[in-house]
Amino acid sequence: MSHVEPRPPARQREIEAQALAVVPPCPSWCALPTGHPYDSTASHDPSDHLRLHLSEPDSAVREVYGRVEAEESNRLGEVHVDPATVAIYDDHPRDLTAHEARLYAGALVEAADLLGRIKAS
Ligand SMILES: [Zn+2]
Image (cartoon, rainbow, N blue to C red; front, side, top):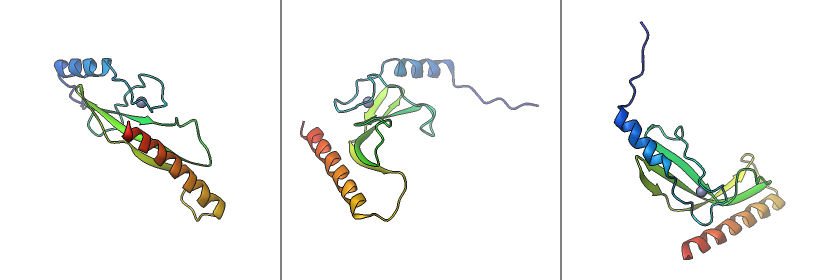
């Protein structure tokens, strides 16, 4: 006897499809392609679709970099964008040399300046 996952009611699937058909515009500082899609696998709740707005795409990888990020959720057409924050990235946590510490400081200041301009606009 096989187990079949219950499918959401047709009306629910229709509402989700309509909600995701129109992707709201990104914040002006988002560097990703216009209309970048939601990811239905990013949330535990399958009807909650998420996407991340980024001031720099993942392809812009440097040794250490900071960027502004904001998560957007779309739950059955109800869109919410979290306040933007600064995120800093590195390959892995480690003790820092003076050079690396300066890279961190510079990356954080650069991202903080961008976030400050975003909040002021
Ligand atoms: Zn975006």
